[in-house]
Image 1 (tube, protein in one colour):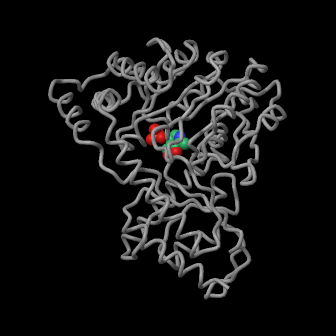
Image 2 (cartoon, rainbow, N blue to C red):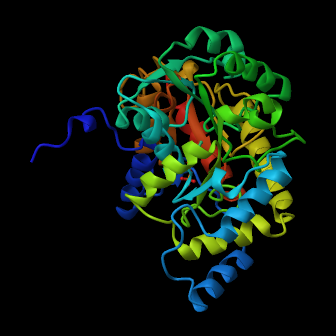
Length: 399
Ligand code: PLP
């Protein structure tokens, strides 16, 4: 059987593939430290699990409305009002099986063949592949370290054409952890305001994982005039350590939300009813545990940054959010391994670290930023210390 042509350029998610490869090596008895995963190491808080248990016991085990139960939509509306000062009605909200499905549905609902989506680098691995799956064209804008990996208003303006449908913004960013200030977002919003045919997808999934007292802003809140041009995407995966529960959601213009819901009704139907009940408990519950989690993430980030700076030639910005470090690794390109192989790219370097040092990290090329590596610091301090020892030794062995 021939597969559809639209799959010609589809690659499996490189982060998931790497985690799988690391798993296989582990199963074969190798000691592997996995710094490639994109999920918290904390357990889902117990009261959230309890809410799911109760929901199952009282019979919330049937189909729900496709775009989410009234209780979940209300919890999402309250969250947007509380955290982002955004007011939505239930018809402007959809819940799906993860943020990933929300993003896919939005692109699928809006892209015709050749429509353009502006994606600043470094980007989350799935955006360009999703755009291609929906017959769109990714317009990749390079945002180098010299501009803190941020898109500038001039770059945005220059990239917009009559075919532009979306700009995708993601901050705190996966993989760099960078965040835009209120003013930086406001300036980007002015470009969007002058181009009413362009929508912004604001992927805010790491909103609550922020450090150093940084304040989170989202573009629809910063410039209410473009609110009708913005889809604000979020989910419970990262903030509440609920990656396996698969609940993501979005607020946006009614006609877009309706289209996304219709797509869902003909593909996966409602997200899991029990997970929805858990998400209601998460969104409506006490958030004070997040202070402790962020405190721990921040200590781990600081430890990793210091060790990288003191012991290696990796060069990294200090991320304000998410749980990744994204150092530049140019100092090691063109080095030779003890086995006599030349390291010609970040791909070679990450393969060397996995094969020779048992360290799984993601090459920057997967995020459209060659010459970098992505390290997750969502691991215990013990594991991070072991990882840094192994990393330092492996990099010292390069000549
Ligand atoms: N957006 C970004 C930037 C992510 O890193 C992820 C997950 O890794 C997602 C969206 C999707 O998360 P989920 O589908 O678990 O809600």
